[in-house]
Length: 218
Image 1 (cartoon, rainbow, N blue to C red):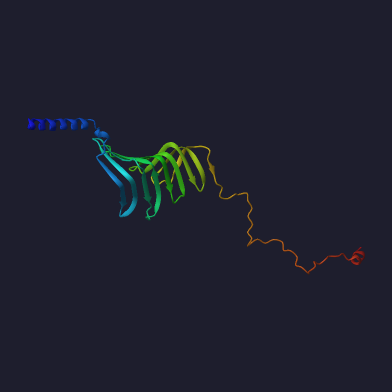
Image 2 (image 1 turned 90 degrees about the vertical axis):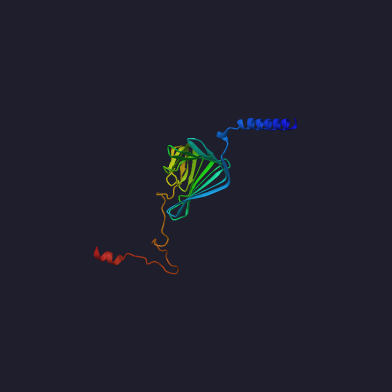
């Protein structure tokens, strides 16, 4: 009797665990969770990109593999000389890899800030897409751009992945900064030659007519 009760208890416990497992959606369950994720990408021995995130969740399906970054993502791009040129930061991000198509795309969303340090440009938007294979970034959302040339805003932006040549597709209510006014007259205080003021204590010569000479000539 005791043995039968023990076997019955084990079977019941297994059934209970299996029913709980059946409730899990494996498509929504990460295969791997990485804390304090950090990796670098190099090319010909030179640093090209650095990526950091507090948490990375890895998902893998038959045709699509992707990583989620629920707590934010920071991307740093480096120029040929090794100096930091571009940064992209967002509140959340996702990286999709389609195995058959060879697709490799990133999407960042939630207060996305893109900076090109060389051009001194800063862009702010809600969502940005990055095609690593095509080496370009774009968005169709509202975007703001701050630069030494002025302020621009609009909908849609296209650029290379280093944000070197960002162009807003549909700008509105933007303004520029005039670096030099062509109508302004600037005097060269060093090379300028103007009228000299008379020196103190000296009198200017006064030209007088000679009335005697005028009478003789007449």
